[in-house]
Every structure is written in structure tokens, then in C-alpha cells.
Amino acid sequence: MRDRSRVEETIQAMQRAGPDALQVISDFDMTLSRFAHNGKRCPTTHNILDNDLLINDACKKMIRQLLNTYYPIEIDATRTVEEKLPHMVEWWTSVHELLIQQKIRRDLLAQAVKQSSAMLREGYKVFFDRLQEQQVPLLIFSAGLGDILEEVIRQNHVFHPNVHVISNYMDFDQSGVLRAFKGQLIHTFNKREGALLHAAHFRELQERPNVLLLGDSLGDLTMADGVAHTQHALTIGFLNDQVEERKESFVNSYDIVLVKDETMDVPNAILNYIT
Ligand code: C5P
Ligand code: MG
Image (tube, rainbow, N blue to C red):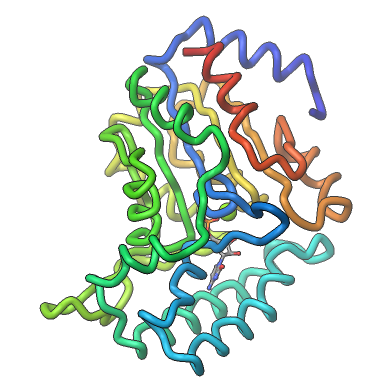
């Protein structure tokens, strides 16, 4: 924590205002989902599609090459967001075009999720269930794939009615084959535009001035920019990768930084106190 007393004061203020004033805004990949388990990387929603059911070997290879090219840019501590932006658009656009060429079938997505090693962070059930019990809305804001993300939380039995998702959704033709992606592309560093664009759809959230925000990228900090009248905001950043290189920028930007923590323990402890 950069400023422990600010964190304590914010938590106290949120506790006084209670659950009716609270909303939680969270990133998905590598924030609600695990970065690693038993020393092995867990897949992002895009990487869950790396499955023989859905794509051929040539396409797998190309998607992996794109990951090896662009992921290091995404997390590079020496480049500015402005420098990264065009590369992110190139990455997402190229992968989405490849996926469309593969004619992915909607009816196979659930099976691909089941066969993947995707996992939510330890303690996820307490997190989702508590928010549902306290009727605190959870807005999941993801640059990943919405259809896959929904399936992951559905298979983990936590897709409760208080959960809202903003993400990249697939557009299927009448026979259930992928033909395009819906709406404006969301990537790691344009979540602010997405937040402003979607604010009107989530009007109930405008009446909740206190925000607990969870992310794993500096781009995630703009996810709450659509909330018009924020009173208290507490931000928690999961620092999963390139820890030494990025620690300073994370500590300067997030109120609380969790280093290689694969659990929801800290968010759960805070929610337990304020709701
Ligand atoms: O849910 P979130 O916004 O974190 O999803 C985006 C993440 O997915 C990025 O951090 C990026 O590393 C990853 N990604 C990927 N493959 C792609 C595009 C993005 O693994 N083709
Ligand atoms: Mg993420």
C-alpha cells in the first residue's frame, strides 16, 4: 500500500455507507480468474479457444505466435499506454479474424471451457455469493471474450443475477457459426471509452457512489470512469507477472497491490467488513 491511512479511511467510509451504496467493478482475465496454478499458467478467455474442438493446428500456431509477440508489449513497463495502443488493436483484430476464419461453433464452447484448465481464484465462491446475498452489483469488465467468460462463471455456479458483463461478444449466424464480433472492440487499454459508452445501460449502478475496483493491468483503473458521482473508491491490483519491473507503477496507481496472490482473500476480507 502506498498510503495505508487512505485505505483505512476509505474502508471505514464504505462500511458506514453500507452495501446499498456499493458496487464492485472487476476485470476478468487474471483478476477473477487465476494467473497460475501449481506453477502452470492458466488460460485467458481467448486462450481457452486453443482447443482441437474449435481451431486447427495452423491457427493455434498463429494465435500462439501473436501472443508471444504482443503479450510482452502489453506488460512492458518501459512503454507508455499510447505506444502500446496500436499494438493491442493489431493483436485483438488479428486474433478475432483468425477465429472467424475457423468457423467456430457456439454449441462447442461449453465443452471447450470444461476441457480447459481455466480456474477462478481461490475464494471466488465466497466473493460472488456474498455480493449476491448483499445485493451488491458486480460489473465484470473484460477485454476477453464475453461468451467464454459467462460460460466459465456459469460452470463454477456463480453467474448470479447481480452479475453484469461488458466484454467482446461473438456474433453467430443462424446455424450457430461465428461470423463476426459485436460492437466496439474492447482491449486492455480502451476500457475508459467502453465504460463511458456502456454507462447508460447500467443506470442502476449510477446510484451507487462507492466503488471497489479489481484489476491486473493499469488499463483496468479506468473501468470506473463511467460512474458519474463517485464518493469513495478503493482499487486493488493483482500484480501477477513482471513483478519487479512493474511494482513501482502498480503501487503508485492502485491503493492495494497483491503480489502473486492467487486468492480472493483480501477482497473477501474487505467485503466482509463493509457489507
Ligand atoms: O479480462 P481482461 O480484460 O483481463 O482480458 C484481456 C486479457 O486477455 C489481456 O490481458 C491479454 O493478455 C489477454 N489476451 C489473450 N489473447 C488475446 C488477446 C488478449 O490472452 N488474443
Ligand atoms: Mg486482466
